[in-house]
Length: 285
Image (cartoon, rainbow, N blue to C red; front, side, top):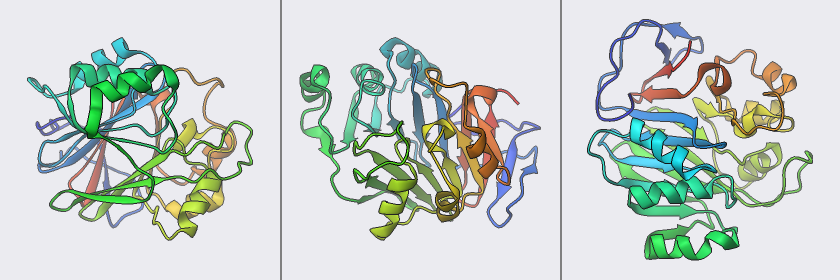
């Protein structure tokens, strides 16, 4: 599974060549050093676990259930791992915070990044006592050189008016990872309006791999945002607590020309890159 160990050779692992736009099927497995992102259900809300080429661990979001999150991490973190390197809360709400706090109780973290919006009142003091000075509020675009060839961009979204009634004006965090020649974008709170606002500020959002926000539900993307991101691979995290039956047909139609995986169909999905190629390992084909 994700971690310092390389993926075992597996027929059916999907490999995307950096210079190609088509999906290739290959039995070859990536060789370290690699960057991996596993997207999974953290307890009603999607969570993301990253393993860096040097073996650091980054957890993005939690879920509503601390026990579900603890079990999910225990099965995915390398054996004898007792801490996390970085934790990121993309949105200050009760859908993501309980599970993240539960994870941080079990796995102390070196640094936590949170959006500008205030934390929900029931969790404010607990967050402060758990993290103290290790909690950093990201108010402006911030870049962090995590390791050689690996850069983390943290982009706060702006509280722009939303065309979709399902989207409120809370500021969130979007995460863009650059590893050598490959980029990945994780922005659960992004929508077409915040994408346009971020681009207008001069922040790049192009990504070879895009973790499509809001389960690709109504209003989550449009042709303009898809063109701006220019992705070659789409991963759709569909929350188990999603209030509709699944991704919006209009969103899926926009993604029809892009190789796409969905957690409601494929289960937890691991994306691995050596900086040039990308491998996708779904739990279910």
